[in-house]
Image (tube, rainbow, N blue to C red; front, side, top):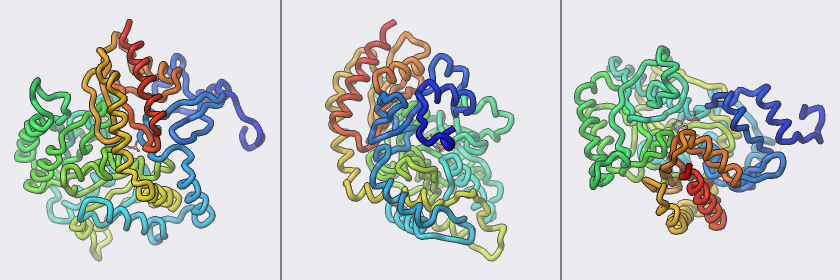
Amino acid sequence: MISDMPNYTPTNAELLKRSLAAVWHPCSQMKHYEAFPLVPIARGEGVWLYDLDGKRYLDAVSSWWVNLFGHANPHINAALHDQLDTLEHVMLAGFTHQPVVELSERLRELAPKGLGHCFYGSDGASATEIALKMSAHYWRNTGNSQKTQFISLENSYHGETLGALSVTDVALFRDAYGALIRQQATVPSPDSRKAAAGESAEAYALRCMAALEQHLQQHHEQLAAFIIEPLVQGAAGMAMYHPIYLKRARELCSRYSVHLIADEIAVGMGRTGTMFACEQGGISPDFLLISKGITGGYLPLSVVMTRDEIYQAFYDDETARGFLHSHSYTGNPLACRAALATLDIFIQDDVLNANRDKAAYLHRIAQPLRNHRAVRNWRNTGMIWAFEVESPHRDFAQRCFALALKNELLLRPIGNTIYFMPPYVITKPEMDFLVSRTMQLVEQLSQP
Ligand SMILES: Cc1ncc(COP(=O)(O)O)c(C=O)c1O
């Protein structure tokens, strides 16, 4: 045991065995670990993760899309050390503290206009739950208690708690719980891969608006909100779409009095090239959901930012008109402090501009990969790149994951889609490494 033997460091094999005996790992069929073993990680530094035997892996997926400025970032570490010695936690109902106030003020400055208050949750799914509840409760408080339905895009992903699953359109995650879920409707995704031959991404996005408009026309009286992943549907396989869809969706939602919930849990915090993806559509949503990268990938924290009019509809003498939702760790000071340190880095290192240069560099060096005979639909938005690989292997994702590890890369394909979503601190030599190793993998995996 760690506590009994301070100098004891297990080997990869020992930790793996103990993990399988004691830990139920997420999003996994545990039996698959017999063929594709877990990867025991001892430490991290920058874009690199190291296992217990000292082997390194370039974290090209930012540890499930959360890490922005590298593992064990010195600036975030220092802020957390300071916060640890000051205040580790206090409940947020009836109390407040400097990190949560400062973070809320700074997010209000950064976010699209009119999102005046921050409500805190822990992880992404809790933010989705909060937004769905808040939206329906808003309508109830304003005399429209029949507005309790939601819509989302085809292949959407908004988390895996029961409410979030009801607006998540991934059969593999949802079907086993069908009986527990109040299934909501979906509208066609503007995913540009679905455009007809010769049709632009913009034209296809506009074509998809017709279905959204028809749905809103028919159902707006029962609809509370439309929830959407702006610009990139991550779990759908990094499906990217034209920002015109956001602009038009905003117009339609306003016209039909339906809230627009922008789930920027994966795409916020600079991932799409702007601080928030909504900026590229020139829109302000009614709810903005932020999580993952907000703490630089250090601690669980999520934020639901709301339009001022929504906040006001809860402000009353009557308790039951308030939003009586809570989680024990809501607004945890350590997590808020990590978020403040993360925002500092954006300013100090002029991150959005630096990322533009990095994206241009990766685009240039990836030319041979883009042109590989097995690569399809090469696409890029900000610091996300994705493509499909034509491969004879039915277990492509697992095979690619395992082969990547052998090649010092952490890639986690979604079906036949390989994507790069690296920490923003990735250097040019590291991008060279990522692209050239991926090229080798693609060559191998495209053959029988
Ligand atoms: C768009 C989006 N929404 C919600 C979630 C759920 O976040 P969490 O896994 O932190 O619950 C995710 C997670 O990948 C996501 O990508």
